[in-house]
Structure formats: C-alpha cells, structure tokens
Length: 128
Image (cartoon, rainbow, N blue to C red):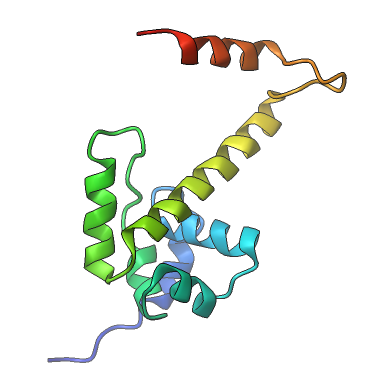
C-alpha cells in the first residue's frame, strides 16, 4: 500500500465552506476553545480522524436521512455519532444566530419580539 496523502491542507481549505463538516468542526472548536486533540477526545476518535471528518459532506439537517447520514459518517471515521450530532446542532445554532443578527431578527432593544420572530413562533404551533 502506498503512502497516504497528507490532506490537512484540503481539510483547512474546506473548513470555511458550510457544505463540509470541517466548518462545523471549526465553529465548535472556536466556541468551546478546543484544539484538535480535545475535539478528537470529545468525539471519541483519533486526532488524524478529524481530517477525514472535515472532508465529509455536511448532512442536511432538514432531510429525512439526516440521522442515518450522521451515523454513517461516524462509522466511517470511527467517532461517536451522538457527539458528532452535538457538534452539528451547535454549529447550526451558531449559524442561525449569525443570520438573525445579520438580518436584524430577534428582539428589539425594548425586549419586544420583532415581526420575523413572531411569525416563526406562529409557524411552530401550526399543525401543518
């Protein structure tokens, strides 16, 4: 078997692309002040597995196959699927907060909910 190529440069490159797991991993590391070793420990994998994990396509949390995709990825890199799910959910929350902030959604200075937030709340109670 030949030498395995060093893909760290590619993993670093895709860490800026939300279509890859690398972006979720980087977000998680920044928010929780983790380095690669600590993130690997939390995910239950070897630090080298983070490179393979970063290069995986990020599953769509809105799709019916999301859980299956997370389990497949976790098996592929030998990490804990529940912890990987935690990383993905954490990244989604961070991205949603950033989007709300960028678009001025959320609460006004007076603490009153803004219209976009109210419409989102009403959709949650809608039976359809």
